[in-house]
Image: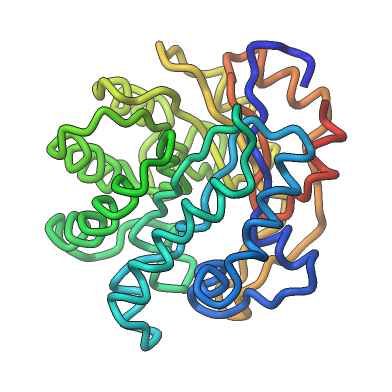
Length: 285
């Protein structure tokens, strides 16, 4: 990335772990290694730091108490893994590396692709409860910021950001959405509405798109006027198959031309999501 105003984000943590020969196909994904092999998670983070990442995202995306109960984890196991997620990233970081604690959506723990659909059919209270205790623990680990990511649903984001505000914690965060068609959030609503929502919160530092195909990103960003900078980290062009719990289709990675388009549109944090290895990120610089 040649624009000095752009911070380099890391890539797919699970992808980097798979490259080490590790299996992460269980319901808790990377979270399982945060209990059984946190050193491997640190090594995966470090591979992105060595490739020039200014920001690394923790492996807490899939971790939740509800998800733990569905997979016979105790609440203590979940809390320990959450704390390990920040610790593993810190051990991999340099003095100038920022650690962003991942806050995934309610749908992540369902293991059925709901994080790309939204509209969970549960109450606002259930969504709030899902995020509440996990947020308290992650905030207590003192990351540099939060990555509220892979969000399909405006309602969930408002619940989550109101909850963060109620905790009166001065923690910067970005919110990134999954986008299904140019300008359209995967769970309904449009990206302009999403930006307007996030702008209402004082600690929001960026808004953007993640785990979405390359084809939707530039037309989505170009159609929006927002005071916030954009954060962009696409997936590698594949589609998630919820039945097989795997990605399907052909890889397509961002090029330097894509990165230039996004930075010209106002993106100030750019990286990759599922499917991106450190080598894929280096090719964009």
